[in-house]
Image (cartoon, rainbow, N blue to C red; front, side, top):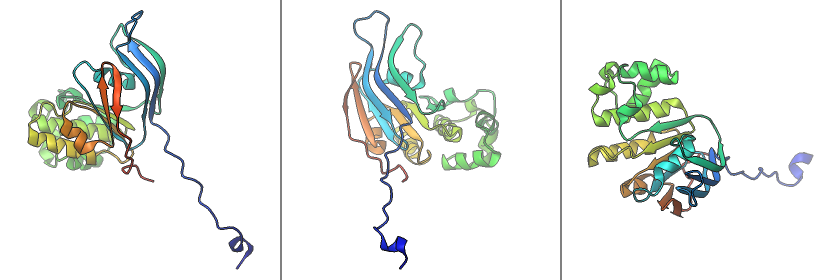
Length: 234
């Protein structure tokens, strides 16, 4: 046995927690001079691989929280606090998939142009999103069904390789069957280290997806579950 082997047992360095991909601290958004902000967030941190579902009544501040994440809020609103994005790239899945897509470009061409992905990467990602019919590559968004357009918007978010993906009520315009399929896709097709923030009125989404569930009410985070990070690779 050599000297190295006879010494104290080697120890692996303590595993550090993953670095946040986004953080808000003491963040407020409201009208200049107003006594109370429209949204007041003491702390909001996103970690790699999280699936954060945000619910709350209408007017609670869900869309305002997404605007804090994107850094784009309505003209006339004033932001104070600390906003620390880990990356300038943020993907977005809207309520209607067509709103994420260029109306005039065929699907395959625009996904390649928007993301720089190869034709094979586009085909593979569309297949993973449930759009395996090669004829869909030549169709324009108006020629897609609502469910197909939503899947295409998810494929666009995946191909963007953005570390944070925001989804604003992406299942509200779908029937229950299509909703369940989209929720399954959101849980599985995004990269393991891509972080999903899903705003919804649908409690089934929180049940199906959330590693952390935030409830907003009256412009504040009213409650939050402890994060489950088993999706995050070691």
